[in-house]
Image 1 (spheres, rainbow over the protein chains, first blue to last red):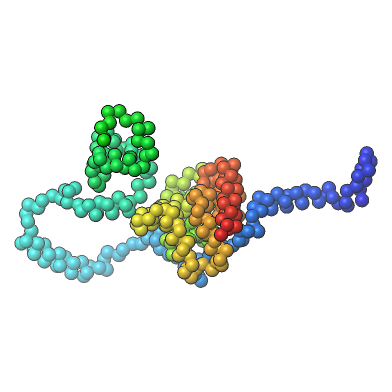
Image 2: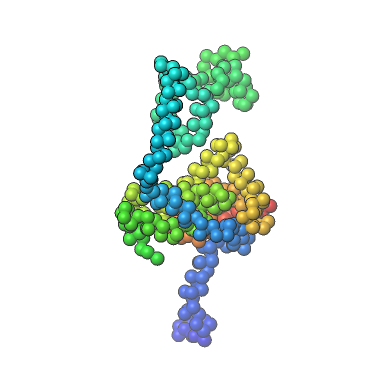
Length: 177
Length: 180
């Protein structure tokens, strides 16, 4: 036991020597979250056998190998003759049926579904604020971007159902009754 | 293991790129896999996102300026790819982000690559209720055992804010597990 000269209290043997380690342990445990007792240590996910061995060649085939792949030209000579013959026949057939003055494709020819699919599947990486900066609302009527026109009485009906006291909205020049 | 600066240099030179990229894939595939898996939950989706992440890394390696560590940069790409993937998935399915998260947890019960018991399934349900950032911080700290300084570089958030997020996440998960 260790005795302090100036007082009569004792500390256990090696108390101060081991103090740092014990303190660090405690801090570490607290940092790791005391909740560890309730929250499970593992999350139960697993991978198919051999997945990590297979994924490297797959990634390399889509990156490195894709870039350095060279297609030999000479060995396909006969193949090209065949293609050329087929193309000549196709050109001949089309030249008979071809409308010499085709209408150019315009924006209106695109089906709405195609446009919608494009907008849905393309990641714009833009927030609504950024879009708002590009598309000036002053030039657009609200009804241009809505599927159905927003009639005044629909707005009033909505407000009537969802606002407790419609007079609190302080409308000026209202005439809805 | 090869030093990071050397690897970056080799990746940015055409002659050494393919060899260096293979080293990069082998070094990081497992860590990135688990990071992505904990966001998208399902193995097949994780595989897709992991491959996309490496393809993006490969295509953009010339733009990597070395302002952050290479692994932080890759983790950031993996995180963004995973979150974008989930957004696109919810859009395609015509459901809200939260509905998709609930559905993903529901699907875990039939997932052959999920061996979790009841408590682990509950943990996933609890995680699905958290905002993205809190969930990310929690899984990176708790399961991936990353340091706050590392997470701070990846998520570009101060360590103080991360500690707060982590504590909030722990409290919410604990409360959820006790209640249910």
